[in-house]
Image 1 (cartoon, one colour):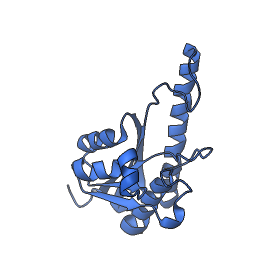
Image 2: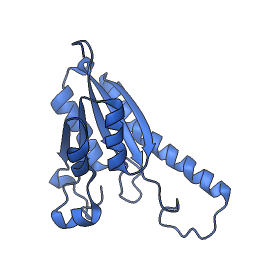
Image 3: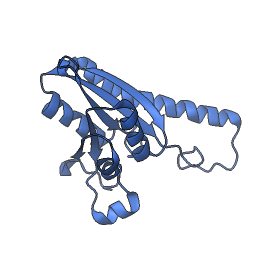
Image 4: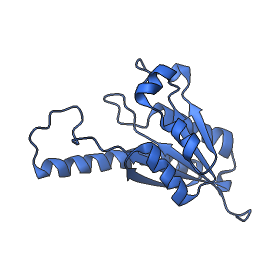
Length: 176
């Protein structure tokens, strides 16, 4: 790597799980903000942010709705809806980068987030991976699992986890 090449930081981002809140999750926004404020600072040309959003396919494709009967058109509509939501999420981060003058790329993958993130780290070779963390306690982690812990153990690059601030914790701490 020459000194003229920017440091490439992959930031894994996801949608909020809070009902009726189709935006970036609290921990994703926190990870992005921390990266800008603590790493990039005013050196916008020295960095390139790589935003990865991993969509988790629902078992049946329907969010909390009975899906005994469905037409092929229903499934096409669901795929379109998921794509639009993912693009809307990435647009949030790309727009912020554009506003402050930092180069970025963004893409969507499908699958198990922890495995897809680690696989993309292997493929892209970023200098650093930044992931948000909900800051769950040991009891909650047993039932929910954490993407950030998996990435710290398995990603083939340095990983920084940014814990959600206590004052940002929703009523149900598993939500984000």
